[in-house]
Length: 639
Image 1: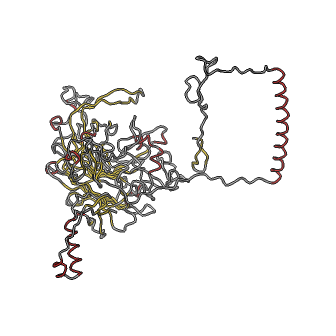
Image 2: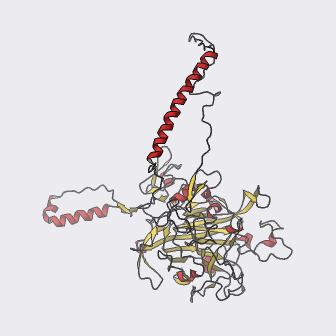
C-alpha cells in the first residue's frame, strides 16, 4: 500500500489574544488547517505514478456485464524529462540492448533509443548499422553479420506483473500511415518467458494449458503430468507464457486485401496460446471452414473489426518430432486512419482470468472505449486451452521485419535477400517510401493498470502463490541472459550518477548534486540521476523450498546382532595385520634423519614451502564427480 510521508517544520506562534478569543475546539481546527497548508503531500512507493491525476484512481469496465469498481494499481505518466531505461536504471522498465532473433527481424534493439521527452515515452527507430553474432543453422557455426535499423524495446519482465484487470495505453503510432515496414506493438507476455530471449520461450511460449496430455507432454516443459512440486510450483498444473497483443499496427498503402473488408493501415488484437489445432487448419489468407477454428468470438460493430485471416499461428519445429508443437493466434483486425499516426489514441484490454478449474474468463479489446474483439473461455474449448492465469508483464516496442509490411510475394526479378537502404540491389525488396520513413517516433503518453476491488482472481506480482515463477527463473538464469551477462537484471542503482548541478539530478525535488559531483536521491526517488519514482510490492510471495529429510532406517534385531559381530571381527583382524606391517617396515626401512636448519644462515640446506602461498605445490582437492538426482513422475532420475 502506498504511504504518505509528512516532513514539515511547523512553528505555531502563541498569541494570547487569539487564544483567549477562540474555544479549544476552534484552536485545534486552526492548528490542523495550518499544518495542512504547510505540508506538501507526496505519495511514495507502490506502483502508482504520483503524476497520475486522482480522477484516474478509480475506473469502471467497458464490459457491460462487469459492474465492479476498479482501483489503480500501476501507472506511468512519463512526465519526468530525460528518463532512460538501461538495465539497472529504472524500477518499472528495462530497455533491452541486443539483437532480435525472432520473426525475421531486420532490427537491433538499443537501450539508447528509448527515453522520456515532452511528457511521453519516445521509442525512436532509425537507420544505423550494428554488427552482431549470427548463427548459421545449416553449418552450425557462428558468423559476424550486420543489421541496418536500430530501434527500441522496453519491457517490465520480472519487475511489475499482474494477473487480471484492465490495462490501457495512450499512444501515437510511428511513421507515416501509408508507408509499410514498421511494426509498433503494445503487448503482454507471461513472466516465465522473456521477450526476444529465445532460450526462455522454447517449450514455454505460448502455453496456456493445464491438462495432462501425452501429445504435449514433451513439448510443454511444465505440464499437467508432473506429479511432484518442482521450483515451488503446484503438481499436476501446466504452466507457460501466453501472449496478449493489445496492439500490433500494420501501416501501408490502402487497397483491398483478400477475403476481408479490412484495408491498411490496420491493427491486430490477439490472444496467442498453445497447444493449437493440429489438423485441418485454415490456410493463411483464407477464411476458416465451419468447425475448423474457434467459435463464440465477438467482433465490434462500430469499429467494424474482422477475423484476422493473415495469421493463424506458427508451428514450432523441434527434434525429435515429439517436441514439435503448434501455437494458435486468435486474432482480429481493425482499420485505422491517418489520425492514429498523428495523435494520441487509447488502446485497452479487459482481462478476466478463468475459474480455478480453468473454465470461463474472457479478454476484450477496445480502442477509444469502443469494442473491438472478444475471446471467452468457451471459445477455447476447441483445444482445451484456457484464458491466461499467468502473471504477465507489459512490453512496448517498434520492430522491423521482412514478414511484416514488406512486399509479398517477392517482386519478379528481385531475390529479396537484402534490405539495406541506399543499396540498389536491395531497393526492390523494400516497401515504397520505406527509407524515407526514418527516424520514426512511437510516442506513449501513459500506461495504467486497474484491478477490481476485493477480487481474488486479480493479483499483482511476477511470482504469486497461485503461479510462482521465482525459483524456476533462478534455476534457469542462463535462459534469461545474454552471453556475458552476470545476472538477468541488474539491481537498481540509487544515485551515483555524475552531475554538475542539482538540475542534473532532477533537483531540488528529486535529488541534489553532492560536493563530489554525484547525485544523491531524496526519499521516494531512485535511478543514477534520481529520475524515477521508487516502486515496490507491499507483499512479495516467497515459496517454501522443499528439502529431503532423514527420518531414520528400520533394521530387524537379528540383522543388528550379525552386523555387530562382523564389525568386531573386522576390527580385530585389522589390528593384527597393522602390527605385522609395522614390523616389516622396521626391519627393512632405514631410520630417517633430520637435518637441522640454522636460522642465522643465509641459505637453508633444503627448500621450505609455505602452506599459505606456494606456486609449486597444488593443495586443491581432486575434482569429484557430482551426481544430482531428482524425482520425475515418481522416478529417480540421474541429472
